[in-house]
Amino acid sequence: MKSARGLNRRAWLWSAGCVLGSGTWSRGDDKPTPSDRAQIDEIGERARKAGLKPFRTSLSPHFLAIGDAPDPFRESALAVCESFAKVFVPYFHDRGFDAAMPHERLAVVVLRDADSYRALAADEAGAAVGGHYDLDANRLVIFDFRGRRDQLATNAERVNSFTLVHESAHLLSYNCGILNRRADTPVCVSEGLATYIELWRPRGRDKFGATNRPRLKALMEAGSGDQAWIPAADLIASDKVFDADATVQLAYAESWVLIHMLIKTAARLPALRAYLKGMPAETSEAKRLGHAEKTLGSLSDLDRDLKRHARHELASP
Image 1 (cartoon, helix red, strand yellow):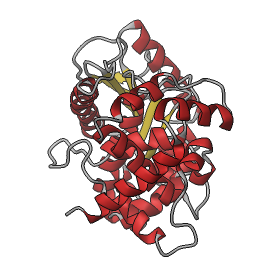
Image 2 (cartoon, helix red, strand yellow):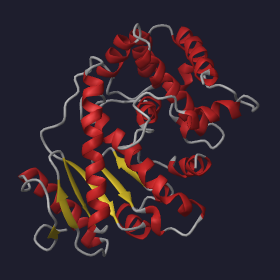
Image 3 (cartoon, one colour):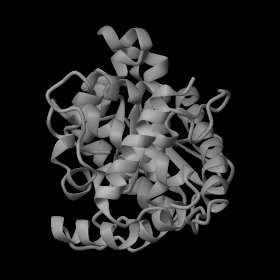
Image 4 (cartoon, helix red, strand yellow):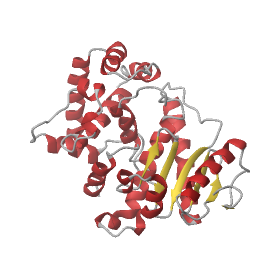
């Protein structure tokens, strides 16, 4: 998601390994709807003001991809989003969520390189990791990492794939009935969902809910540090732990443990559905904690169970 946390995510990645009238269209599955045209006009105007060349656009049944990236890269990203959505919606629907694709296409801005990304998004955090999901604009913005000339460039394909899947998880979570964009969703919840499914690849072996060992690595490393565990109440009440270098990787790891345990534990899954569905719009630590206690139960008990679940996953083969 869009925040300064991207710079910290860069370290984790390394350790883990058109304005419509003047733009050009490539092949697609259908003609743009009025909603599509509105998004294309807005994004295209931003590109023009940023000094970028006219964007090209591709359409699929559920997404529109627009940007200055070469056609193959843009259309490849579009295909991954479609494949991902075909897995995402049934997975959560089968687990009792009111999951469905929205009626309007979701926008994915696909840019040529980090220079185009900075010009359009002005987001140094996202430039460190390949892109971001913009909650306010409700769109995904990515760029091709292969043009970089730093240590991450050697893993550019992996960074491209990771960023697209992780940020698409945010895009779909907020548009397919899992999370509410108008609610005060704790970062540990949105990032927990994204880390729960970020290992998925179109032709890979990892499925949703697979043990996320790169994230668990942060738990192992934290065991010898000053702070080996962030209490569940603190994780839910405040997002500050995601903004501090000392705690951000541990926060991501525990977010994965939180969502993994709540989804994988049949007795807790209904509570997770109630928790997400009733998320309050008002932003306050008291509201967050009160709603969590009401739906998820005692947070001290939750903290105990999360530690147990983390130990179990760390010990699993």
